[in-house]
Amino acid sequence: NAGVTQTPKFQVLKTGQSMTLQCAQDMNHNSMYWYRQDPGMGLRLIYYSASEGTTDKGEVPNGYNVSRLNKREFSLRLESAAPSQTSVYFCASSQEMNTEAFFGQGTRLTVV
Amino acid sequence: GENVEQHPSTLSVQEGDSAVIKCTYSDSASNYFPWYKQELGKGPQLIIDIRSNVGEKKDQRIAVTLNKTAKHFSLHITETQPEDSAVYFCAAGGNSGGYQKVTFGTGTKLQVIP
Image (cartoon, rainbow over all chains, first blue to last red; front, side, top):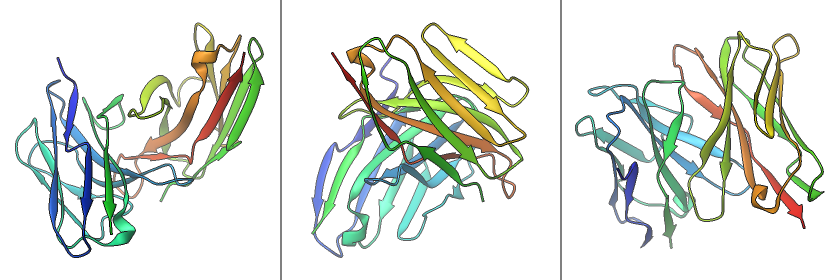
């Protein structure tokens, strides 16, 4: 039982490049989330998926897109990376919205 | 939308002393208040949560109190140990603009000095 698995753990991108962060959970959770964590700013919600087949914007969605591929997988795509997207990204899942969230280990992304 | 403020941003205590972290929230519709602990290089992990129909909840050395009228909630850690050193986040969640999403505070870095 791995919980929430994110790949990759580290990534360096050049400005303008694109990439997809992958996330999978094996807890049969309905809800999944993508957060970014920046110093002094806590965790900010980028996008979430309350249930399979639905996605919604969070606080800071600009520059990102998501896909809920199936109940297990929720990916985050940066179409044209910018230095402002340098951050640590966390994927999380929960049984339902507003219940205990389980987080992955994070992806440290640097955009140069 | 919801706004969660958390204080202090850093906190140092001697081992065995108590630590208190305070949060305020803005949306009276919020009804779920979790606390997460994040150790270095790891994702946050839930340590305790409380819902708005309860004023206080305790789990061993950890307790959370909620004052809905004042929109305050606090985390209390008693008999602190070095392994309590971490960053702690409060959060508030509920129906805000039709979304039941959780908003996090900015975190408190707790250092327990042996």
